[in-house]
Image (cartoon, rainbow, N blue to C red; front, side, top):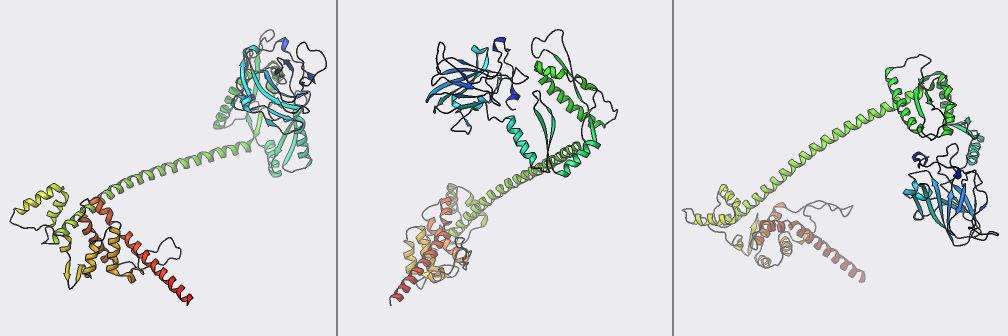
Length: 554
């Protein structure tokens, strides 16, 4: 059906020399001038079976054959379907079949489709590789479209069958419907709608529940909606029609005979549907052939018949479905608009949050620089005023040096910063770090020569807390996420952690003045202490293992 919907006229009618009476039947194709019995490799074509179609075969060369297919029933303009068998082949024989009288300008063969093939030893249908299939317009065959495909026979005893696509015969369909009808299923009903031109059955199948089928029959008999019937009246020209599509086919509405009026909305919707149908049918009828026109002429008396009817319940159901879809679409649009507004508001909040974060970072940097200047000033002399410190911390380094030189010439005296060692108080072999924390002087001097921030921080933490306290504490007091049953440990004292940071800051300030580097190095204090706590716990576990092993040996 998809193929048939895209047919087009090739522009050449079938002449008297191309009239094909019927399908070939066990037709042996012999080379020109050959006399005698057919040999292996002289192909025998046959299409005298149900759904078969092949009208003529021409021998071009030893490897090439031109195939002519018969047109569709009652429509000589459409030539698409083919189905035939080939036998008496020779092993490894290569052939090219040209189907030379296709009537289609566009075909799925251009988009990768390929003919079907099967044989007696391989009864399952398979497609020929698409790389061996070509669809083109050939000037040697009245500019008809030609489909050529190459094939290689591999078994001499097999009979090969080629088809346009998967065949589905009328007999197979009737057998399938007979089997369904014999089952006496409540939801299946088969009725004879009519007969085709060739006296074949046209079945009407109804698949629904028994209750719905009864309701459907009652609604058809009682509640009906009148729809204008489409009548086909065409004006015949004098004499015989010389070409297809020259008749002037007119499609009009027949008058209503019952006189009943419908609502204005329903009338307009029906008129729109009928107008669309007129347009589609007008396009299809403009290319009709003479057999179809004869069939249309027999239906001229339908103008006086009753109007076509459809069940009202089906119309109302479709109308309700359409209204529901419109309502759902309106809700979806409202939801999309609400979501868009929320996203815009969130974007504004994120922008404001980003501005606040940047301001907080600037304030933190300013506060850190103020603390640094205050610590340096308080280490060796009286405190300076906050406003002066703020102005000095914001100004660049050359301006700070200039300010110091100017202050040296004034009456007020501000001593220069002293070394870090002079900042801490020494008393009785102890060093006071601040907040009441004292450490041994000898260990403090050994700590100052320690290389690396990590080792310095770890040794200082041991000097302040001791290993017994560190192994039972954590930096933040939060349980680790690596273990499911981990129990949180008490956190370390915040004021002691601040002392560790101040000592590390004093050490780093002697090495660099870059504030970014100082901040990065100070941010690793917690990490260093965590590593030291893990090392202490690990060494304790190893010691316990050694003790238990020694006990077991004893």
